[in-house]
Image 1 (cartoon, rainbow, N blue to C red):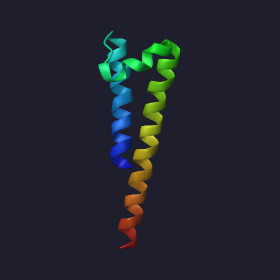
Image 2: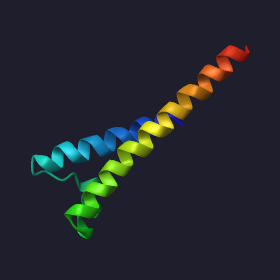
Image 3: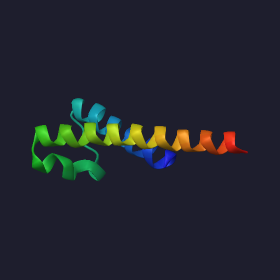
Image 4: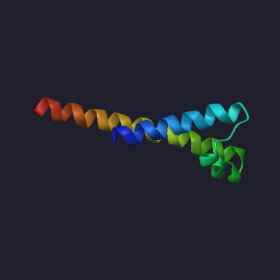
Length: 68
């Protein structure tokens, strides 16, 4: 979960930063087809979901290490 969370967060952050610079990655061009506001919601959602998954994965790993 930790790696998926990292990927989602990085993807959302990169899309946000590149979007502000006027560049849209081809992989994420589908986000902008629904309008700018919806695109921002999706990008922020990626970052929030990614951070949550990363933290859950880190917590799960810490729990496993403490049980050993």
